[in-house]
Length: 199
Ligand code: GTP
Ligand code: MG
Image (cartoon, rainbow, N blue to C red; front, side, top):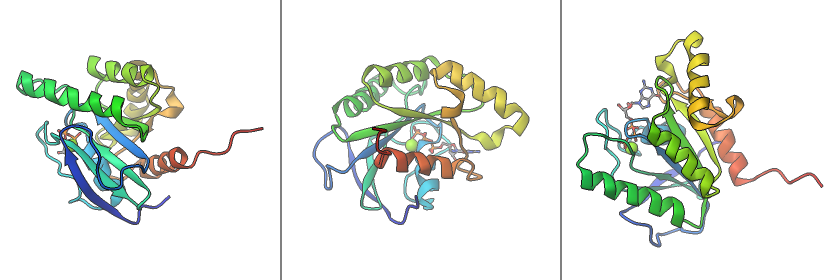
């Protein structure tokens, strides 16, 4: 699939009706600073669409982007930002969980983990949470440009162990180089128009 149009629709502090609601939604979840907003920018070829920062804690609300007039990307705040004030962290967790548990249009989540590090306890909890609530998800290992090809394989195995994903399900991705973009877009296509089941 190709993305031909992408626009910011709204920021919400909690899930409530918004223009266009009813189209399918695909959410980006993961630790603060893992590259959720950067992935949206890379996929849409618009480096200014979602705000990014080298400092964790940039995205602080539920941000909805309308793509190809056919679905939404939901950019969420990150978790696991140790230095954030306790109340702020609790607020973000409520926002993330309120959205994931509350959206009727949520079709899929992209769970982003940093390819260089073993998944954290928060990452494991998020994978468990998604499974528990029956939210289908794909693990995306971000910042793959930061590892040489030889190290990438071992790193991906660690990602699998930490998230419970199968090796062929994890997509190595780089917003910098564009690695994995076609695969992620392929997943989006499959999520939006699943192949008919065999009779
Ligand atoms: P929060 O909104 O704080 O939860 O973070 P986020 O997950 O949206 O991360 P964001 O997209 O803001 O990126 C964080 C930092 O990582 C920025 O400095 C990005 O430029 C950098 N970054 C994101 N993706 C990549 C990548 O694939 N490769 C490299 N080298 N840097 C990346
Ligand atoms: Mg962000």
